[in-house]
Image 1: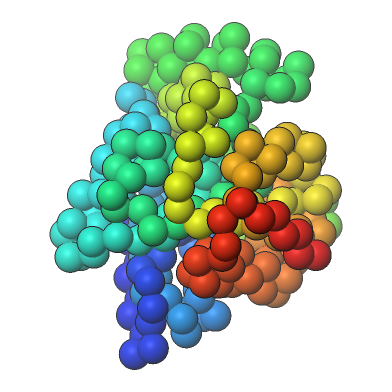
Image 2: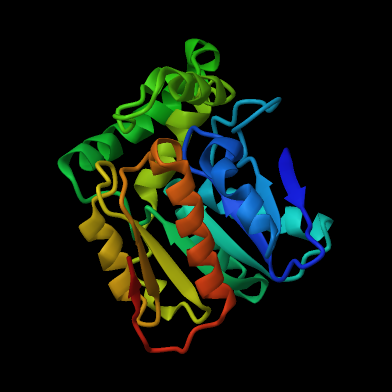
Length: 270
């Protein structure tokens, strides 16, 4: 498993960064590495099937992602850590608490939801996801297509250099992994148990998100009574469109969890 591990002499709680579907840790979290590294031991793994030098993973599973992250923590001799996930990575973070609660010191959930079945487009993807997954196993073409074939609809205001970087990073992941991951995401729901989370939580809400509506993100926050809400003015691709702002808000969200805020309170930071 490929990962980035950075330790600062002043590092506090270990922080595991979990990236979104079809992208890489560097693309998702790169703008925030330097600032986060001043306070945390930052571990930024590639989720299975994603990133450089990895094989496609047409049997993608969010539960197995969570297992792999715990195995990585074991190999690095990390006992407990803050799980910080973005989009699909936020689902893995939720499952880490669900499956391995003794290992999770806090959750940071960015562009997150309790499921991804709310909109008509999401329901359509969900209905097609099983067929996508079967095709990923059976069709050699999907092993040659890369994640950048999805397009960049959520990037509306970036220069050519940034767009080329996104293209290059997404080309590291096979479409067979992406289609299987889409099926796994479509099956996920934390409605019945997310309110039981008993560790500090911050929810990073992308206020202009065209993929995960902000209202759905707030419903996740509302389901966790002690969650701190931190908003960022951006779409789903804010980590590319406004990297400095994204880095500052991610650091703020991680700091809020690391400070172990009082329970049963709600604070919103803009």
